[in-house]
Length: 287
Image 1: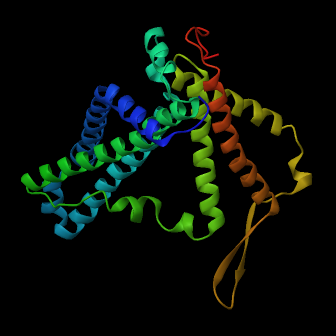
Image 2 (image 1 turned 180 degrees about the vertical axis):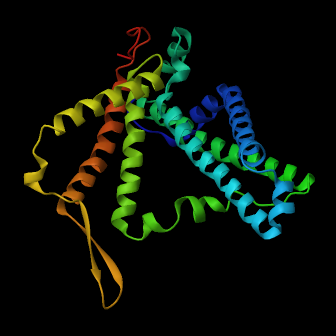
């Protein structure tokens, strides 16, 4: 089947979700526990004792210091979310490791595009929902414990947009473009690795990326960059208006355009690799 039927796709998506429901529940529990323990570590183990801060520094200074502890939990949550997304991308077809599960999934009466989209939605979008939900629950549990033990109540969720990211990356559309392009580019690399490798997808993909990055660095170091004098981002300062204006070199647009196009190339390559999957494949590769 080569056509995409939405009704058939929705039924297959529901079926795959129910098949993997135990996995989603287990991941939600693990993610919540990890982030909750991290929250307790940053607010109750490291740093000064809250009661000591109140007695020695006063309520205002104690609030500021404890607020910085909560910020650390938010930073950890954002980093955990990033690794969760890479984990989900590399385990795109983790439910097809053994021959029985692979045979059952490949014999579904749905098209290859529908099968691929199902795994993509569950491994990326649904895992993102699970991770965000786990963070919110962990933050809520921490706040509840703080309230019960008489500490000041400071939620970490609102800090994600105001303290961690801030407005700096979004002051210029070019910077926002660069940020999202490189984030999705790295994610697309793990999508390809999750499709190509049959075992140890996250580890092998990470090792491959590091190895290629080292080789590219060694090659680029042999080029005489001084003679080219390329600065991707420069700026000028206006003394009259006291404003700083960023200037983006044409190579900035060329590089980020290439990265953006490679994202689509990687997703296309991942899909083509999936269409070549068989019930019996190579021990380490899905080809």
